[in-house]
Image (cartoon, rainbow, N blue to C red):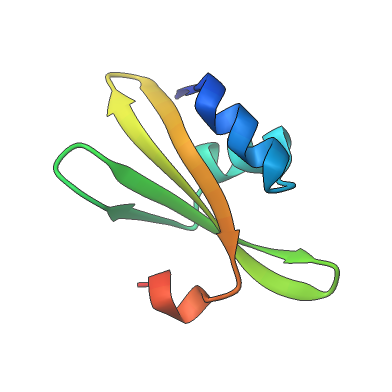
Length: 83
């Protein structure tokens, strides 16, 4: 599976202090995949950052063998999103 990160996503993760490596890992090896809407999906993976657990969510669109990352963020509200 190939991964493409949109410019908007790259700008967001820089502001949100999430590494490109973390986003790529979340997209390529998610712990969970959750349908968000008709054509958008969320890849989710838990990480420990500074001894606290966070959930990284990457919203993406799938196109054949390509996952196009649209936005990404981290949250400590894991129970809210974890299915």
